[in-house]
Amino acid sequence: MPSELFPLKGRKIWVAGHHGMVGSAVLRRLAGEECEIVTVSHAALDLTRQAEVEAWLGETKPEAIFLAAAHVGGILANDTRPADFIYDNLAIETNVLHAAFKVGVKKLLFLGSSCIYTKLAPQPIPETALLEGQLEPTNQWYAIAKIAGLKMAQAYRRQYGADFISAMPTNLYGQGDNFDLLSSHVVPALIAKMHRAKVEGAASVEIWGTGKPRREFLYVDDLADALVYLMKVYSDEPHVNVGTGADVAISELAELLAEIIGFSGDIRYDTGKPDGTPKKLLDVQRLNALGWQAGVPLDVGLRKTYQWYLKEAEG
Image (cartoon, rainbow, N blue to C red):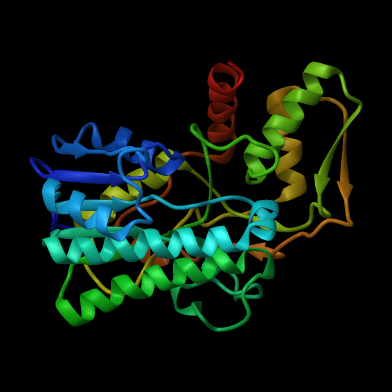
């Protein structure tokens, strides 16, 4: 492991978006770091309101920030509410980054998304592929907002020397995910659909698209570990991809989940629905060279996620 440039022990750290899947995982990971963790609810602080953010940060004065707060969703949510996705995310990142600089926060980690890369990016996708082509139309609004946040972090580092860094995670899943079929990503959507089909004795489940697209999936507690690691050891302008380095076809994912859940019916593909990007696998050589690799295999992470769903999401 590289030497720690920014030890966390004894520091006051704000996890922005702590109720979300990523933020709650970061809280779990920070529990063993002997740091003071600060959180604030959306009801108490609206991150889209600049004056509120500046006042709260000025009063709280955290030394470090994990910026995991975002307006997120799957293909359907992005496609039907594009204005919400671009406005909310631009507002959150603009307000938090600028206020962090103004009050003298020592370090900030901005969390992006692998959808910032172009639809037909080279595979696996290196960090240098950013802005080298057309974005995927179904989530371009969210992607543009996240690209702006990444560039803003770089700009404050370049102009003011602010120690702002950015991490770009691949597709995430795990406890605390959103299982609402109208706004969820593929893993929680499939879990909810297949579990319901199993309970109701349905003969089949329907999946959007052809099942051919390939995706990389990272267990959220693995991401949290990587983010804490980067906060400690990384300080540079380029963003860092965070993933597993392996991908799987959506059809293979569906079959694996059917086995885990115990659904024995047919899996049918609605080929009239969009597939999204045909393949998305991140090049994680930069992260691996820093000394970190993902540790939770896909089947293990999916089993943990389903067990959490049974315990929490079902009641």
